[in-house]
Length: 268
Image (cartoon, rainbow, N blue to C red; front, side):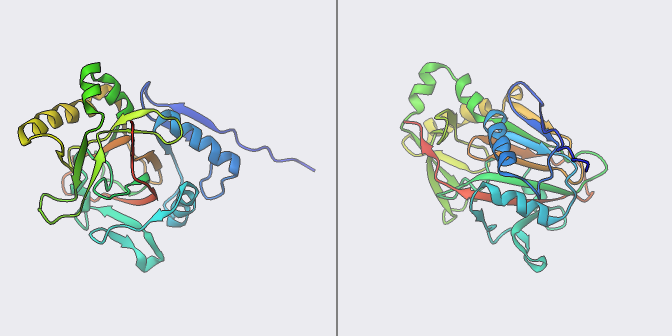
């Protein structure tokens, strides 16, 4: 009787700071050991890419369920409820949501318990363009001078879903820590962070400009040139992303699942 060999799992770093591609796994049939491999790689590389997984939403859901409680999309996002996948949001040009992601952000940071993990599944691509960028927020914090870093501890910022005064909002620390490793990171973003609560308006605007500019420095980023069927996962508390709108009126559609709602923990 011939024994079938298991495929070798390989983790290929994409930059020295952030991002890795994983080969040798089918995401709808993971073992416990596979999940531990992914979790370890996610801790080290912050965002992971799994090429060639096909476009079946069942694969997307099966993979996402390994990473915590699934969070249903906000009512403003289209979803796949009619196909039996209420937890999958549809971010596309056909419903206008693709254009809104063309700005650096952490997903749903305006919630009191933003999702720890975001999992994307590419469905439709334009003939050119449509890449996504991710930025490492551990590196952003470490790039600040010691006096500026020290000034951030104890400060909080308001994150708001829209500029309207009655919009959903939440306050989070400017510096947060990873619950397992204890590593510290910056937690602000250009799209949703409204103001720093403990500062005057002028002080808040000046400090946010500095922090936002540092948080997206090119050397902290990785850029993904998608292929249809790719799946990506990242730790949304410690990574920002930006879906680049550079493809005119061509169609682009991607599916998203959010998992593990959790309030970011203050670093101190």
